[in-house]
Length: 296
Ligand code: NAD
Image (cartoon, rainbow, N blue to C red; front, side, top):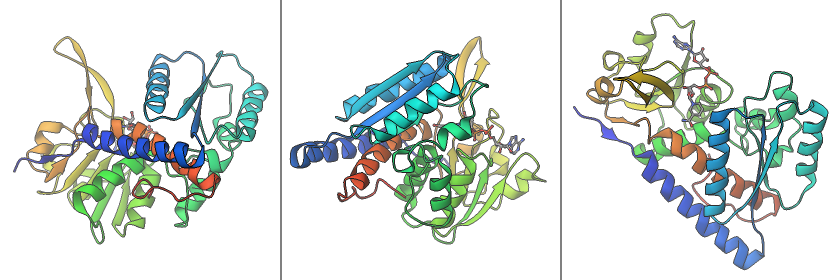
């Protein structure tokens, strides 16, 4: 069997087009322009690239982009003051503080200072609680994008066995909550899981969010299963730096029914969902109807 390739790049483009169409309507009918503020502390090169591409895509869908680039030695008090100012600014509907923060800053405190209604990353403790209790939350972008691809491919996920590998607050745990919300039977595997390959072999859906290059191999995959590869790992191969996922693509694709590639799978969906979340936040704040199919 050769797996169907779930094209995250193309799907993300359709999500962004949907967002852009709704943004145009908001501007024309309500005079509202959704605004996203991104705060970057320090000069981490990967974070700079992410922030640049987030800003570019925000503008491309017709939203307003506000970038706050702060020096690496920014104090916690100054950062919190900026977050509070953005909370109070009616032009801003979404706030994203780029992680990781430098070690002298308390990430939990900073994230929990963001107004939950503007928390487009979905990391605020209130949104975590709302998601966990099946209420309307801002949902973390990477799991939301993964869920959208699964729903698009399968329709209903009800009754499927899903194994999420990784238990981070950013990906693994919210992904498991979302799959549970769609009535999957969910297992969360992690670094202490015994006999991981046997656990993965039970899965109709495998979501790999580990950060270990090509760890999941085809022998672990149940024939016909759907593999969502969240991992983004830079490795040296044949003298070049290449991006690979947490799944060994060729061997998994030979067994799976469907698979997301790296790059071009989950990655593009993450930014598309950030834009979708900003639009959702804007609609909720203004008491307007939310676009369909862009939330969990
Ligand atoms: P993390 O380091 O916070 O969590 C990794 C998880 O993997 C941990 O819960 C750990 O228990 C588990 N783990 C580690 N070794 C394991 C092993 N041998 N067997 C089973 N589980 C093991 O990482 P994260 O932030 O959740 O990110 C995971 C991966 O996803 C990374 O490659 C990251 O770059 C990528 N990522 C991609 C996107 C995207 O947009 N595509 C977004 C976020 C993260």
